[in-house]
Image (cartoon, rainbow, N blue to C red; front, side, top):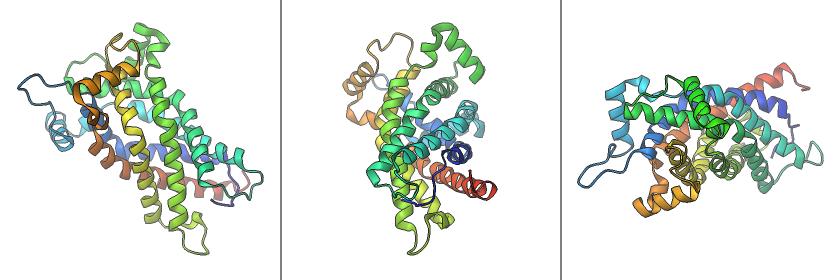
Length: 299
């Protein structure tokens, strides 16, 4: 929706910076989301380990302090910078491929398609990082220490199950990220367009407007992503061989034991995290993009 030339290279660097901003802002609620999604089913007459988002937050703080909320953050920080760089690069490339000339203004379905391409691009980096992050987060909750950190976790998974073990859950990561990324970028561009005053460029949007557009893009993204994300968290943290038919087994077990609403486990934590984390991400992206446009206007 902007006539300015699209630079996938600038998108790459600005997206990486936006990703770092997102992790710092959103990781505590991501930890809570994974713990809620993977908590064991309570036995007869027993209450669940966590009553909800705020109970999980309170118990984590009481037991492990603020550090507990940032458990497993090294893996997404290592993975998220290149992952968001590749994600924004994929979106920039998707837009550029659909333009017949640099002045072409893309329609919303075209922006959605460009966003879906970015989801395909990120899965190769995302799947192993997500697997390691989830295992470290549930280990911290259970108190049963198997992994000393992300590198040790990756080594042990590889030693036990090879590269397939490291990439366990890739299909579910694709099922989550491809449609959700389409929604993510399309929503952001749509809100930027709506919030841009008459006669102004979307590049001149105020900080509060960028934060609002980025935060709402995160909300729309996760509205699409939560059910496959629940299945992915379950599948990636399950003992080897528990689900021989992959996500179909996870889906059947969840619906049989806990009903359809179990696909929205961690909804409150996800939505509480989605707005500030993605607002921070897009603000970081826009700031970095302005700096890169100033530094290398012809790139």
